[in-house]
Length: 100
Image 1 (cartoon, rainbow, N blue to C red):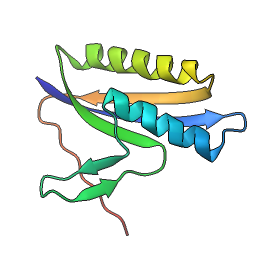
Image 2 (cartoon, rainbow, N blue to C red):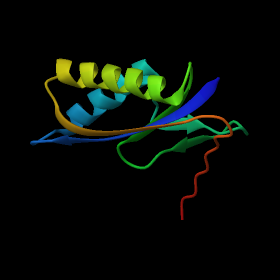
Image 3 (cartoon, one colour):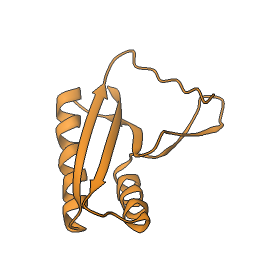
């Protein structure tokens, strides 16, 4: 089954613009992107420090735990101080974006 995950993060203790760029790059290697492609093919940029992506697995909880471990490992390698929020939705998920 396919699930949609969102990850929101904050780097603390004097994080720089480069630190955030590295965080986005690390998240992209995991499959969590700051820029998503819509069904119609256009790109949307998620609000600051939010990334998302779709994943196939055996349950929302297992995917959540796997993604959280991967993000923590990537951020720990960079010695970031951080706060993370991970959410995973399953059957019937959908997303929408509006910028006003």
